[in-house]
Length: 78
Image (cartoon, rainbow, N blue to C red; front, side):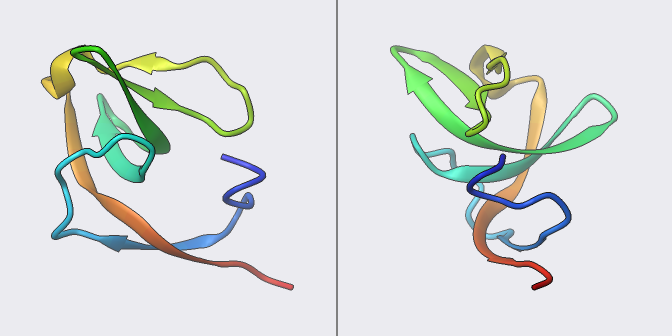
């Protein structure tokens, strides 16, 4: 998620905000991985995107993931 979220940064996740909104960053579980990506809606489909240009992840109606919450703050070492 660089340059938005630096590698090794600490994130504060709002676990009460689990309803995806276009353009916001969420922590979610997909399979056995915990990921942090920006959610994008295209028509009726949702994608998880990286700000660094990595490939998008098609979320297939959000049925295959567990949204843990929205990222609201980032802290990193100086």
